[in-house]
Image (cartoon, rainbow, N blue to C red; front, side, top):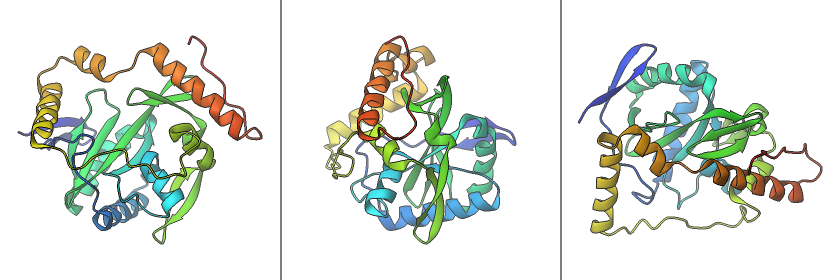
Length: 246
């Protein structure tokens, strides 16, 4: 089934894929090739992205990609969203095709050679706080960046990357943890495929946001708890402000 999203260049038609946690284990070599090519094209066309989530963790801890991960994770700022949508047309001739669009507008996935890259759009939710996928992160991790050597190339990552990883994964981020079981049964796989087909094609947008979203108090409480963890572990860095209202 083909569908489309609107971009500055017009409609972008694509075929959605059913992607969910545990759907497949990453092919490290293909994913590496994809990341290097995407970075090369981004540099040539003035598009900037940030390694984040599992890809930031892999770059810092493994000096590569995490073998028990499932994809590549990058982040962009909301003000660069139109530039990214334009970039989708640029990278299509190189084999990158959009396969997922989160209806909340903060996640896109592109695939090449069977491996996909998640692109998270970071929106301002509170002063100095950005959000994506129902979770909140300090804005400085996306505004204060440094170049990081990986695979013989340079990538943008948060300047205080160890602090950022502590905020995302907690104090144990240096210890590898396999979080997904890729030996999924046919019944479970069918359930997830059916669930995401319903969510993306039938469920009204309010229901989609309700099921996938987190309540504001829960989001704020999680954010404030991780602020405490960061302050305990990095007392000499710039203080993170808590969000009032938890």
